[in-house]
Image (tube, rainbow, N blue to C red; front, side):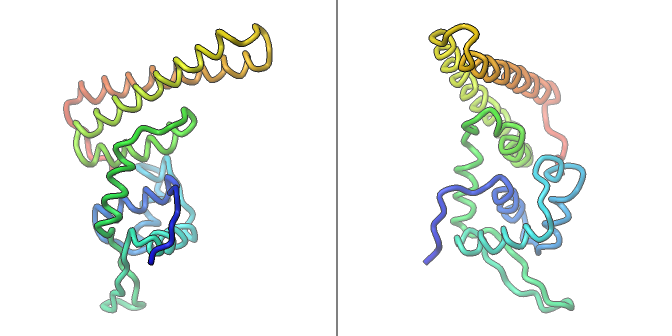
Length: 187
């Protein structure tokens, strides 16, 4: 029986996403996640952590490993399971909950959505835009009730600014993708 875990990290989803694209062994994953481009730019993972993630995902039965004895030394090659694919797809379609998660979690999702298709990436951008708009509306309501110049008002103004800038960026990205018509390979 698999262990239960309520939340995977962006790094765990990145590994799961790579393994659903094609089976790989730890060193291949490590190279992708430590590169200065692609996923490595937003979700760098230390080499030892890649193996800890593989162990965790295997324990959750989201991936499965098989030994490849054709090379020396033998190495485990991992692939996503059907459950891993389902978990990944559910995660990929959901916008992130917090503005601060956009810089990492959302960008990991966008990487894989772009790999999938332009419509998938645009759907994700639209869902994320709606989520940030709802967040911004909630902040504005709280700010209207806060005492001007209070610490709470200062914090809420900071959150309001972050939401506004994030929305502007999301709309810019959507416009760039629409203008381009089709994403370039993001690897």
